[in-house]
Amino acid sequence: MGIHPFSLKVSHISSAHMETSSVQLLPEYTPSKPAPDYSSKLLPGEKCIQRSPRLIQRGDNASFTYRQRGMTLKLMDCREEDRHPSYGLGSTIRGEVALDNRRRVVAVAAKLEGRIYLSGQPSKGVTIISKERTLWESSTLNGQTCPSIMPLSMSFPTSYRERGQDRPFRLPPSFELPRPQRVAIVYTLQIIVTKSRNVPMIGKKLSRRAYMSIHIRYRPRVRPSRPVPDSFSEVKQSPEDWMEDVWITKPTVGTGNEASSARCHLFFPSVRVFTASEKIPFHLRLETSPVFLHSLAKLFLPHENPSEIKEVLNVFILRQTTVNIQGTSFSHDQVLGRGQMTLQSSPTSKVLISESEEPVTWSWNGNLQCEVPVLNTGFNTGQISTSDYIVLSLLLPPGQLRPDLSLQRVIPIRLATEPWVDRS
Image (cartoon, rainbow, N blue to C red):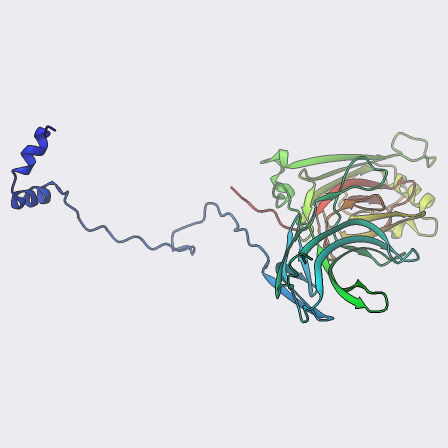
């Protein structure tokens, strides 16, 4: 075999010469300058150009331990809500099951159930999901002993189907409505232990089951797709962030002239999905005549003096729950928050209801915010539905929706449980 010429040449170079050549080929290095100090706090002369809020998750590492009838269940990696384990959209229930006495145990299973309960109806309620998973099962061939600890892993489905319905429904959250008739959506996790027992007189082995059942909460998180503007003053800079709803009220009140109407312009954020804890800015303009409002008050509020009505317009957030279970139907309206409004200066800055036929224009800036806790967003099943609205009410105080809606304007929105987060 021939030898490469370069290899032959290198073989005659002394080791000392190779070491010298290697040192000469290395580049020269100079010490690096120390890195500057960084801090989120501004120094004198500095200003913040843009700041993105960090996504801070609420604690998802809570754990719960339950002991009952010789069974121990430990749940991990979940949220805590009112001392109950809580799970989000499609979350996985993780935990461990242990038994004090493993003799004669032939099977261990976990069962996740969701039911709708209505007072006055059968106690079992209407089942929306029922999902069972075997944690361990004995083989009669080798007579295995139940392990001391059995891992549990079971996920919530994101949807379910009802009898007679073609389309699937999104799995509803845990829910409770105390009045006018109590209705609730309840989720339970059940551990089922099956044991064998001998019956001498029969000469056969029978089995019996022991159960442990706990309540868990299902709370899917919902966030707005974009942020809400801070105030109506930003409408010129970003008009796409706002929408206008025009409402013309013209019931027959016998005024007999063209001015017998009220035109209301509501400007509010176009995203229409709002975090329940945040403020919703809005701008309101009312074009009408005092005599028209006077006629409306006489017609719809006959027991009140029109001149003593202080709030001509009211803006509020309303949640409507409709129930239809096994022949029982009713609806419940709950006012979640009332708008705080500031009348803008104008030639007729004071709102008065009189018999004057002179046209007037009043304008308000305001904010809406839920004043009660909102644990879940709106949902819809075959039996229960909840919907959220911004409601404009002319002359009438905040309250339930009237059947004719002649003095109310209903604008569908969606309330979210979590704030918007910039993920860019």
